[in-house]
Image (tube, rainbow, N blue to C red):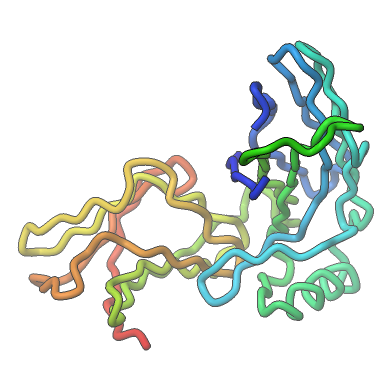
Length: 252
């Protein structure tokens, strides 16, 4: 689960459980619990977006594949609110996959046919009803929860990553292309070469390369860095340590 700041937080922030939602291929409904640990009510809007990746970036597209209910919430002080998620399109049929891919194609984000489907549940905090505008800057929070629908292959589906270090005028970017049928959650990333040079990218979560898609991140490698021999990446992918060869490319 990630937390984003909007342009316009309450004293308390929502506690969300679980922080990642996963549907099995045959599961049609699930839910998550929102808890308000504060002393005043919290209000919010709940929406689901199809989550794709294009040109190395995340792309969110409105969808009706998964419906969140209720769409507007009021969580009482120290209270809980159940949000139910229902798959309106619960089939991995060719028609269903085609509809999902055509929606993504409009934004350039097209995943792997028959692969895991990815969504984001967004919860935007709203002002209390009847609240007048206040002077100064008001920060409202946006919560973003990843939602995944398992591919028909189920547990047999795995990510398959190819790593690239792209060199452009502004520096380096690390790209992970995933041709597998399951997303790759990438964390604890470092680059190293045969000459013993090492570059820490992050010790925490870097992000996701979705099934049949790819993601790119700027990395703290100097633009004039010289690599001594083959370049490798060490990372944790879906909680498992990996070490893979990285292809160095010239960017635009």
